[in-house]
Length: 227
Image (tube, rainbow, N blue to C red; front, side):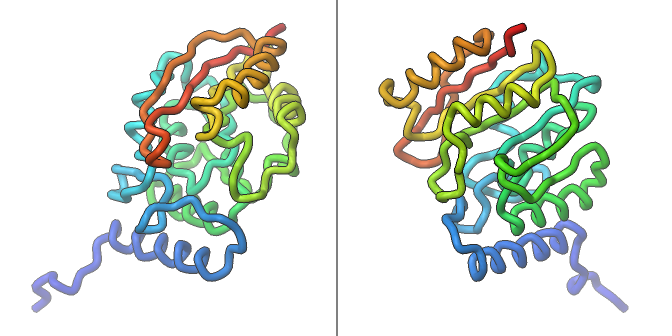
């Protein structure tokens, strides 16, 4: 008679698969890894994973529900392990997530399969090399335009130009500052001037951020591509 004590739940099986990717990343990825003690930068309560930045709470803090619909497609640049991208897929017609680290896209794909999500693709690529014929209604650049892992190649102008080219007319850019920009006008003001040239500012607010601990808030902007 099986008393159930040796049974492994589906969620536990998922956690085991995801941890294998974390271990492989630690051994084989030759660059900085954004992660908490358990190896996850993003957390996702839906699958009981804790991380430095909790997905559901971030989504609530950004207050972006009104901009999302099942008629829109989106791109998430530098999507890490993809938990935030996966959460976005619930509110959109389709989402593409771009992430240069293959171990993180493996985590995203395993989670996507576990949750039976069919309106999402993860692409293992730097944003510089990412290629598509799609034009997006919304692009997310969440603390990603200048990364400390040494993988960013674009200048800020090149980064914005590519976003411009990927957005539909009047498309939206959801923007979150990298940690160093948040409190330093000398770093952020030149970016703001470039935004003013190419976008209309719809909203701007400070949002709580748990990572890094010396940056308790980040600046979040909703920008609309000018005609």
